[in-house]
Image (cartoon, rainbow, N blue to C red; front, side, top):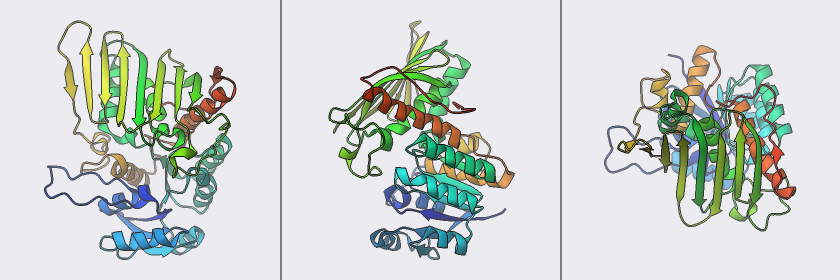
Length: 365
């Protein structure tokens, strides 16, 4: 089968983190949790180039990855890397507000697949430029909202679509975490609320963390310093009548729970690893842990893959078949960004109700 050449732009932690090999392995190897690790884990992709402006980041790659990626060539100019390496897939892992120009240039250079970190951008104008470029060039682009490749969340959405416990009425999410920052990590939860509500968000009311009254547009530093971004609380109404609440707090506690309130039951997604269901008819509670990979479910690959490796598997499938990635396309990522920006607007207007700009032909799936 065809193999593909890949390159990465930006060598931050999420780009090149490498977990130590465990002393003993379960039946399925632990999933890679970075772009470079995913490229190492896919048998049909070779990492031919990596680029960063910081010498220390390049040194870290050389110290960490040379045993796995011995032939990867290093660059400080991504345009030179594109010209010399001619990759089929490019990861864009720069600070949040630097994605747009790079994605547009990569798409215009004829690269077939783009894997962009979340959030897609920090303004809707930038997101729209990116979408126009990839759609005009026929680029297969996906945005790294990684929970969309976790089987547990697909199982949870099946409960919504199958109406197993009746209609979904309310979603409640909590994120208590030291890095509970709106754009850096909050984007994952807001994206998952859209995924589970399975509908377009219409309006919201929101507030920011105390001390961020001047944060009326993105003023972060790309997610490095916790104090550069606020956490937020929000109440969202979706087009299908579902209401969602999110409470965020920067905290040493590590709590990540989504509660789904149906007509006849409540399902709690706990820590990305378990769904606990309580039925109103008095039946026993049930607990589900999913071990079926999204790659297998969608028929992409013969091996288990989720999160980062699942993302890469979907991009490879798209390039194989001439289709577009389904799970986190740019228009869905734009919808999530529109929520983040509406939160800033609501806070700036005294916690007013704000209409969410979901964009033309938006999708919620």
